[in-house]
Amino acid sequence: MSNLSDIEIAQSSPMQPILDIARGLDIDERYVEQYGRYKAKIDYNLLRDLGDKPDGKLILVTAISPTPAGEGKTTTTVGLADGLRKIGKRAVVALREPSLGPVFGMKGGAAGGGRAQVVPMEDINLHFTGDFHAIGAANNLLAAMLDNHIYQGNALSIDPRRITWKRCVDMNDRQLRFLVDGLGGRVNGTPREDGYDITVASEVMAVLCLASDITDLKARLGRIIVGYTYDEKPVTAGDLKAAGAMAALLKDALKPNLVQTLEHTPAFVHGGPFANIAHGCNSLTATRLALKLGDYAVTEAGFGADLGAEKFIDIKCRMSGLKPSAVVVVATVRALKHHGGSPKDALTTENLDALERGLPNLLQHVENIQTVFRLPCVVAINAFPTDTPAELAMVEEKCRALNVPVALSEVWAKGGEGGVALAEAVCRIAEGENHFSQSYELELTIEQKIEAIVKRIYRGDGVSFSPEAKKQAKQLTDLGFGNLPVCMAKTQYSFSDNAALLGAPRGFTLNVRQLKVSAGAGFIVALTGDIMTMPGLPKLPAAERIDVDESGRISGLF
Image 1 (tube, rainbow, N blue to C red):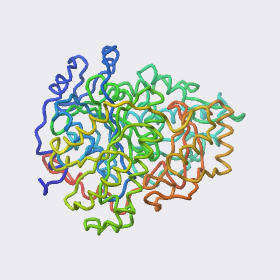
Image 2: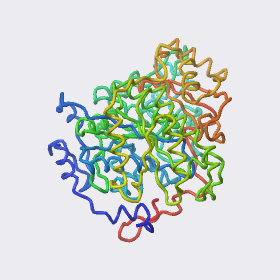
Image 3: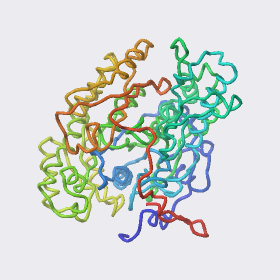
């Protein structure tokens, strides 16, 4: 197996018909909408019909700050669920749905790897069931209706200079960040500055993920603010009469997607990537279904615990009433050595000094889970053959000082069997009491909430707000949005807003350059540092290595 790529492992592993997976969860066929033999959407009305069925335990998987060395968060999530099944627990996975990132950029899908994957892997990392197309279509319908409204007489007195709504596309394309459209005469619309976001950063994505049902979805869509009038009043999708049509486009996308792991553990894969620039959690509907159908629902949030886990707890849990029973923080020895300054080409060589310098990154994430969010925690070391006994012992020793159990996860190589130790550790800590809390209270001002995240989670000295951000904070507060939670748009590579500050930096000030409201999603977005909501392609896009043969078999995807 060691010579096989992730996609080759997935393609060589037999799958069960998706109806069999659904039957294993006691899902009646009337709720199952098949997309071929191995994918299905589950009717969200199942949640209503399950009624008062008690929830299982919610297990959140997060990780250290990501590095080029890789952490294996999704791999661990999948392997943990398989491991729970190995020890006799009824486990269900709820994962984020990948964008097209693996195709246009670099490795970064959300299907796992090795023997711990969700399948059909290539479908999941490509168009899957069309959810992202629906999100993009709904987003761009609203944009079209907005510009058409202005063209047709602008009865709402929308100021074209104060339009905040952007079009989106599921593609890294820096060429689309800033543009001028409506050129070429009156018949082509009103000329104005415009731009695109990547689909995963769109407010429609967050709305889909946070909506509790179709009625809530439509209400949230109606609250989306697209711009402001000449007298600075907000204009919504509801004002443009767009919410109904947008909801119609998203009707099927709201239904969670059911697939399976290589070991046939049921997996809901639905919405939510990119926690560095967006909400970064899978859908509430999928999470709730997993909780109703399993004794353990294993889920993940995007990037490190300072981003994905913080948003999961401060936004998703706050809005939904969810409460994790345990948290897994994933790390690798090689990634910790990278945080300690070891060059990428030397990560396979034992280096206790670099490991010790990098360990504060892991320890800060763990301390945040324990002391800020007050949740029980276990560290999962995603094993590599190059890890030495001395390196593993150092990680365990440092974690033991925080009273945090450490489990070696070998799920990449061994699947569920390699996740048994982690599964047993998770079960032990999930049975205990916890005193779950968030990192800030909603009653604080927008500035105070951001400062609380920076000081308590990132351990920065404070926050610097640009003049524009200060003005926006006052405007948003005056408009009645001051009590919303905050969604931080920040580099994933550092606790700070400087990607080069690895480990656990101190003495920094976080720079907030812009604040905007996602009124439909229900949070304030704070853009920090040089973070962008439309990334670009790397010098060597992953697309250069991907191909398909005459039989339709894909190669080079991972």
